[in-house]
Length: 151
Image (tube, rainbow, N blue to C red; front, side, top):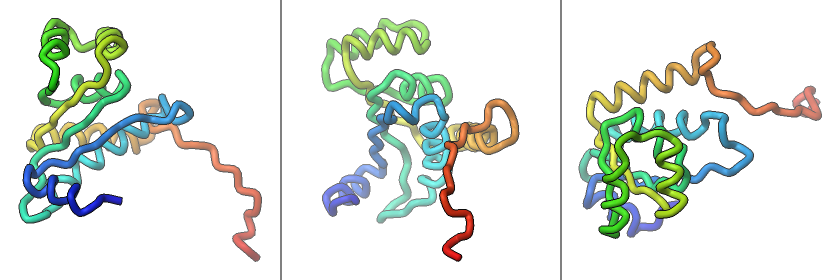
């Protein structure tokens, strides 16, 4: 649950901060892609004194950074000049390059503006994930011990 100060921060900068770290057992199931695509499509409709204009991700694992950098127009931010300089040396945002960077430098902060282009890309990703193809989301197996629904 968000504390009052968090909402005030969101209001003042018109940005939603998201800290993404997928639990090991849920990795490679495309849940983060689904969640972030929904966030892109709905965040611009959120109004807290003003419309939300961007999503700010703190990427803890390289797959999240790779997903955002390879799918959306975005910017990175580092408080540490050394980290920014090292990141600027990356010529291609491959998973391997980002993993190497993050192993030595830690998390990456990525800001994605809620532009029509980025929202459209999110919609396409969402449609792929919920469609009926090999790129669709991998749903968890659910064990139903009682199929009688309480009868």
